[in-house]
Length: 84
Figure 1 (cartoon, rainbow, N blue to C red):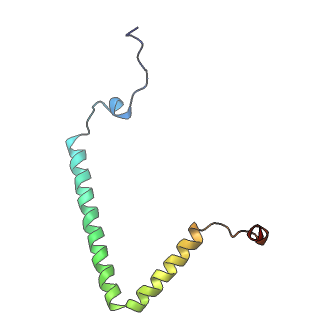
Figure 2 (cartoon, one colour):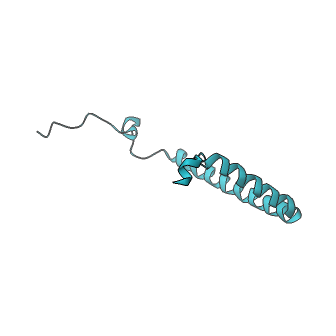
Figure 3 (cartoon, rainbow, N blue to C red):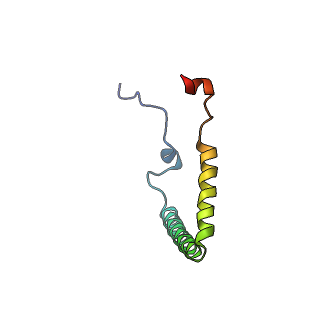
């Protein structure tokens, strides 16, 4: 009965090792660090722009809220449903 094992293999088992290669881990860490730097730069630039142009920032926020409401909002209910 001990010979009856599952024939399925996880992707890591098929690859040949349980852990990813060290260069893969280093590349992932560099990518995460690069992403953090880009996000930090974007936040600083948007903050500086919003301080210089507060009116445009308010309009941009309203426009973004409107678009998100249109995309994520459901269909309007028929009047007959609202009267019930």
